[in-house]
Length: 192
Image (tube, rainbow, N blue to C red; front, side, top):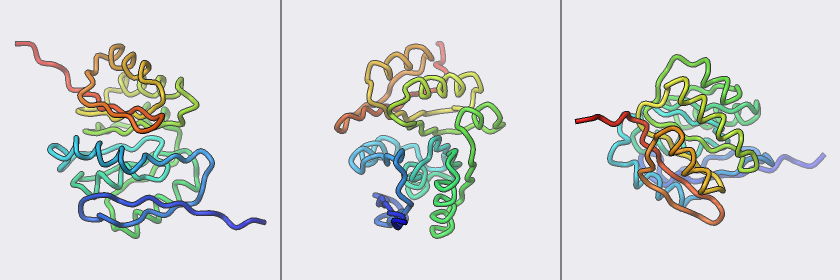
């Protein structure tokens, strides 16, 4: 039997800057690239302090742990893979982080939670755009996004379609390799 390989990502800023997050290799795991995370947290830094975060399809937890490192008040990590959830718990304990780890499908969590979140990271497997669309529809129906949603996927047209469909304006966008990433503003616009 071959030994389990491990992967790691490095936290890029804040109180845990430089710390490595180690986790078991999983074929479906695709952590957000460092340069994309750096761009994302440059966008978020002015408003991140005290935010309540939800990291759906959490995987390595890089987005949620980065948010905590840079000032978010707490983070909930959701992933349906039990080994990934165990890895997230271990990292959380090592960092002494204020987290909740939920081992459940993202859509089920969104349908059943009674909480609202200031910042939601949505980064499902790239090969399943219907999962992305269905999850965002659930987020809209459940009204759990009080401020910002981050999405990463391959299809820029799909991201624009999602923005238009849910009337969530795109505030920032970037691209790294084949991945497109956007921030959506979910706060209702006020009419004068």
